[in-house]
Image 1: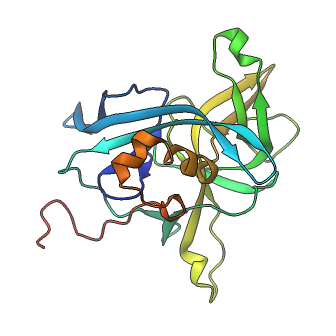
Image 2 (image 1 turned 90 degrees about the vertical axis):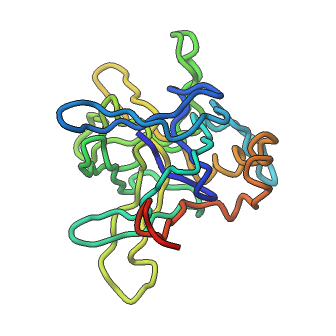
Length: 241
């Protein structure tokens, strides 16, 4: 699932565990009962983990992100989300750490909104390496709100879905029609009979990924604090300019 674009029309991001550098990136869509595949670009580089720095400390964050070099003829619709007959712009959340019990929603692979809460933040598991998996560092653990039993709000195949803030009631606030992206779904985590949806911290991961020398050369040194989801204003691939 393609997660969205950042910076400009030629640079994208998605989850990185299904891609390798220089590999073609494809979209899949049904047409006349068949699955149509379309190459939209090439994987520029993948990032499993990144090092985040503050004034007082340095720590590891699981990124699980791939940066994509999109083809010139790739057309991205305007990054808008439809919910309950309302239309929302999408922006990367860059505020303080997200607190436990924050309500969120995910637009899954079937086009349905799944709602839940942040149950663990930050969540780290450094024992996964012994089971042949990659460790998790400072990720979001998301589950359903009811009961003590923890259940994920996504399923296999939902990797790449965006973790969004819940829409607010309408008011005079100009930010009312904005949904913030807290992270990108990267996996499911299970223990005993419990499951969590795991997502990266997109606002913390992006600055470190886009500071990489290879990526900086690709995006022409655009300041990382200006990186956000692109809004394409034309009406489609055949729009007149």
